[in-house]
Image 1 (cartoon, rainbow, N blue to C red):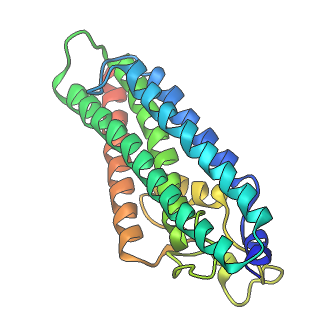
Image 2 (cartoon, rainbow, N blue to C red):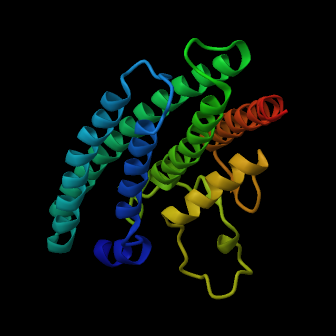
Length: 235
């Protein structure tokens, strides 16, 4: 029963999309022009990748175990392992968030007060880089937290939903067994970063509401200040 439920609710490409998202954040760190993080640009990306590799291996091994599970003892062991994987994924996301926010504060300070060795054009490029990283990072947060994250979604101890997607409404025809995938959380993150508020998907839990506030505030600061600075530079 557990296996059938998991197969129905898990999007098969989600873990690959999440790995790709982390690779994108590592690449964006490498593309920062100015020194904006407390870690060297190469060390920040290397640390993210070093944590991603064992996490990916553990996730792949758990999926193999799920296909071979035949009794409740196996499922109890799998649930415990997936809880550990979920914590590791959250720690990795928190690390990426900390690095990106440190870079965000540094570029905002440089745009406001100037920075030695930095010019306006390169700071604007870095600010756009940080904004895009912010979108990717919060899509990872939403994906990792909603209903216990991908590690627990589909298992019998699944938690309450953190988001209300339009497809989850009772009058959504053709979506009776629909569940959100990573692309859906990326869309939520992108729209929140551009509209500075929820659009079609509503946050339900207190933690996701706080994440919405943090992401939209960071985006508003970046977009507003970058736009104002760009006008000064272009004129």
